[in-house]
Image (cartoon, rainbow over all chains, first blue to last red):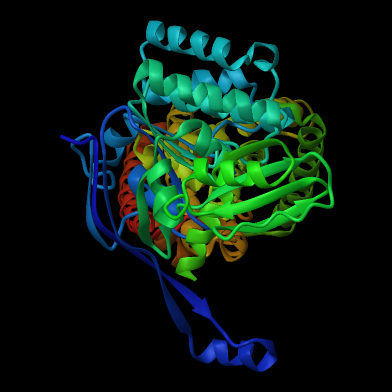
Length: 326
Length: 250
């Protein structure tokens, strides 16, 4: 049986509204108007153990809402969720014992306490046995390189350090399931790589199932085999990165370095998208013209020094997909 | 954390000392001018006042600023990610936030008031024990009320209203301004039944001997009954609060 099963999940929020200005404020006293927002509008998916899934979507698409429902913090209006055989919000305490959650924009550590004391507190809260705790703690400290700031109060840590501590904190009780809500937000390149590397390791070596929400497409490319795209509360796409690409557009890019500039490259089956000095970028559809044919045609017509074919950047693919929901 | 702010502790101590002195002076003036026999002797009232100042921080008069911060920023969600009962978690928090500052302040206040300002030791050894037992009851009751105040944040978010009304209610009806026996006779019956008497008045009167130590069981029964009632109420409203809780952001 799948580890996570979600069926037809719906969650609405009611937002109070009023007209702008003084009159609007006065009217708001007498009469409240509410607008209902369908944050989740019938979401279904299932996850097997050991999967590492990227969950992406524009701001306000319903990503965090989904994570909160799955974590048992939010009760949905309707729909069915079963995780490790439990309904998260009905058996919250048993459920959260088996999962780890990191919200990138918040910390679950105690602001004024040294990191290590936060860890000790979590040990007591999760009732982790002393030996298991020590083993898990020491391993996490080692893997995430936390040793040098273990005695520093959390409020004095840099964002990158804090995020690494939060990751460690979410795994002290060895959960089978990890929810990461924008874990790389605001991190510098080095910290990002460290966090990514760590997530991948936990997934590969420990078989922890990971659901990752992010806006950073490099995270997705580096980590996720499966990607779910959500927009306006519905799942727009669910599959591998390759499938996502081919669904949105089969388009490829050909970059040509010419021996001398001033040459105007053109081809009936390709379209020039950018020209910069002696470098020309072309767009083509491999269904219409195979890359090999296009390359040999251009190479025979123009003084080519170098050329290469690539996929359009994933940002563009996603942006394309987001456009379809607006 | 509470031990980290020395300046605040010193300033708080100074304020309470000053406040206590004013109260003592008022009662001295009052007792000197009255000809009617009062239900409490002056010495008892003075000790009662100093006890009130020593244990002021134990009264449930404010919300937990950390919980308020969590509710405002939405981090309260993390509280639900802990595999513990939320009510128990918050009740324990209340016990911690009520005991730490009280321990810090009561000892210096006790010593200062006894040495210089006419505070008396317990009326008898039995009174001392009865008082100690009733103080534990007062802590349990106070923390149950504190927890309800904290839960109310899930609705009010700002706690502005709560932090204006509750301190007044608690201070007046627990004997924090005027010892309850000095209230008019017609109010006595009500005051005795209300939960607030168990927070301060009963334990302090046990200390000064105004309530005989063999009545301690009645005091404890009053405190326990109200604690159970408040815990049940708190649990009920918390479970409703959790159901409607919407965590901001995302």
